[in-house]
Image 1 (cartoon, rainbow, N blue to C red):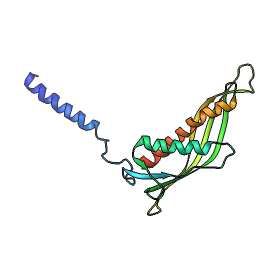
Image 2 (image 1 turned 90 degrees about the horizontal axis):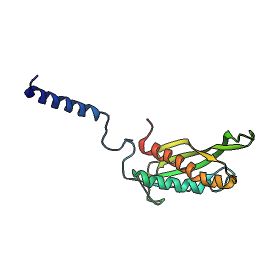
Image 3 (image 1 turned 135 degrees about the vertical axis):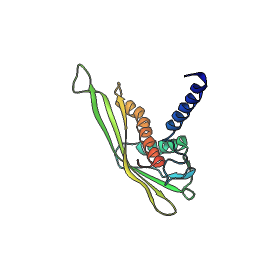
Length: 173
């Protein structure tokens, strides 16, 4: 091959490669049922467990995550396109590692927070989301179990909120 035929062939291969690498890209919102820039009202979360502070942590985590993600704007109750209601159903702690000298006493817990979430379009009443989500975090037990639980609570709420906002923004795949 000489230099005159190599350059156009290289350009053609580069154009084909660029065309194939962007083949899966879509313009516009990922979830076609959800237009970008819609507003959402996050109702205060209901807590059906005996654990205090779960509802407040999840409510603020959901609002923070909606602001972070950017597809939706937070709005007041009467002005929002979508109303999000959530109920905390369960909080589980499962020992995943134990002290070497005391096999009964856990050293680490896998903490799971389960909540049921519904998102409804305010005008039409159309159900956009109606399912349960689980947030998980690993909790290391120090000298004080209460302090460890207080520290893991925002992590649990953030994990669950991230899943909820992702499911609402991107829809079901």
